[in-house]
Length: 362
Ligand code: PMP
Image 1 (cartoon, helix red, strand yellow):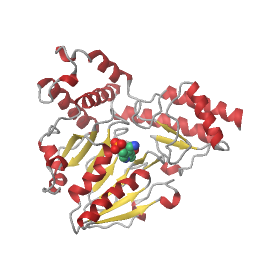
Image 2: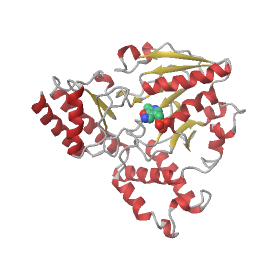
Image 3: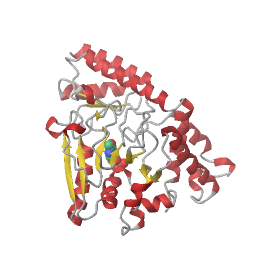
Image 4: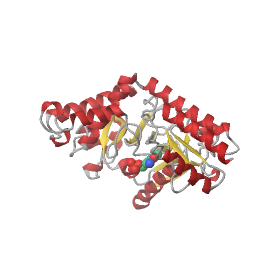
C-alpha cells in the first residue's frame, strides 16, 4: 500500500501493460524506449497520449498540450522567463512551500530583468493551514499573469472549488492535483504539473496553455525555453522522455477504461472522506492542522500527540505493508497521499489501523 507523495503509486494495469510490452513493442522486437522519437511506432504513442488527455479533460481547441522536461520546478523559471518582460509585473498567491518556491524563482528572474513580482496574497501567517481567497488578494489588473498553486503537496492545502484571481491571465501549478477531477480549462492561460503524482512517472511535465498566451512569450530566449517552439514542434523539439510519455499514455488509458474523470473523482472523494473521518473520529489523538474548507483530497496531513508516537505509527504501519506515510521533512507529522491510483481498500485498512493505534496509545 503505497501512499508516496510523488513519485507515487501507479495503476497496476498501466504497469502490467508496460511489462507485457517491454521486450516487444507493437511486434517490433524491441522496447518502445529503443525506438526513434521520429518513428511511426513512437509517434502513435505520443499522439495517443495527447489525444487521451485532451478528451479526458475536454481541453479546448485553442489550448495546446505540451509534454516537457525539467519538472514543475523548471516551470517556476520558464513562466517568468517567457511572460515577465522588463518593466512588467506578475502576481503570486502563496499558500504553501511550492508557491513560495515559484515566487522565489520569479523574483530571481525579475531582479535580473528589472521586472516586478508581487505577493498578492499569502497565508504564511496561518502556517499555511488554509487557502487564500480572491477577495483577500491584492491583485494587479495589469499583471502579466497571476500564479497560484491549486494543491500544496507539503501542507495539504487545496482549493475546493477552482477560484479565479482577478482579470490577469491565470497560471496554475497543478502538480499534485492534476487530473483528479474534471475542471474547466478554458479560463486558464496555463496549467502545469509534473506527471509523477497522478498521471505517470517523473521526467514528464505536462503544460496546457492557451495558444494566444504562448504567443505572448518573449522571442529572444533560447528556443528550448520558449513554449512557442515546443508547441510548434508538437513537443518533439528535441528528444522527449519517450518511455515516460508511453507510461503516461498507459495511465490515461486506465483512467478512460475506468470510466473517465467522473469515476476517478468519486473514488478520490471517497478515499479522502474515509481518511478524514478516521482522523476526526479520534480528534483527541489525531490533529489535522488544515482548516476544514481547505483540506486536501490529495495529500492528507495530520499530527499525533508527540513525535515519538509519530515514529511508532510509521514503524507499525510499515509492518502492516503501508509505505510513504512520513510527512515532508520540513513539516514533520504524517502525510497520506491519495492520488488516482491509490485504492480505497488501502485507505480503509489505514483507517482501521489508525483506530486501533489510537485505542492502544491514546
Ligand atoms: N509544485 C508542487 C505543487 C509539487 O508538489 C512539486 C513536487 N512535489 C513541485 C512543484 C516540484 O515538482 P518537480 O519535482 O517535478 O520539479
